[in-house]
Amino acid sequence: MKTVQDSELEYFDLLETISDPEIPVLTIVDLGIVRSCETISEGKVKVVITPTYTGCPAMDTIADDIKKAFAKEGLEVVLETQIHPAWTTDWITEKGKANLEAYGIAPPAHKTSDKGALMGRDEVRCPQCKSTNTEVISQFGSTACKALYRCKDCLEPFDYFKCL
Image 1 (tube, rainbow, N blue to C red):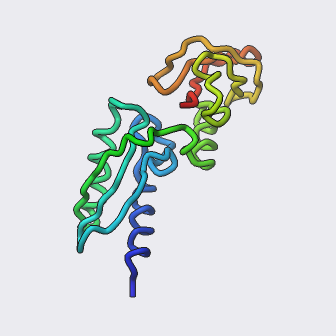
Image 2: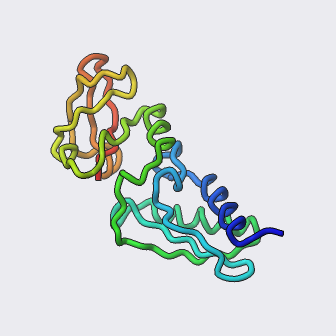
Image 3: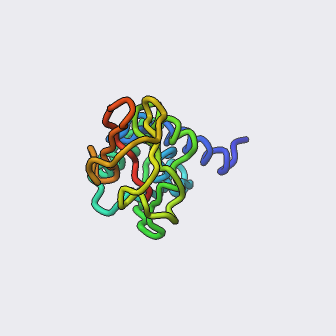
């Protein structure tokens, strides 16, 4: 007999299939925005998500993708957005960080207690050649949560997922 806990594990497996629309190599679970998932009643599930930052334009798409994924399984989703505690890059899984680097985006360099990344003072490793001889070009890259860096060794530009 299947328990509620078994169902909730299956729900997380389903959430693992949903990619972040801005960074398709990250699932929303690996990104750390899924806070919880629980059965409310027969056929109804509550999913709590935290945006990476207030006003993140991807959240509407993510919400739609969650609803569609669960609807395919015959389940209705009640979505709740939780903004406290605020999302942090510490919530990105190790798998997510590895996927970012393989995709060409430097993952956060450390825990969020050091805000050096926000000022361009991080030692950021180039995702192409793995050199730390890099420099910040712009505090904002392809999205607000990334900065644009350049490797001084291989001369390739790359995004760095800022520690937040």
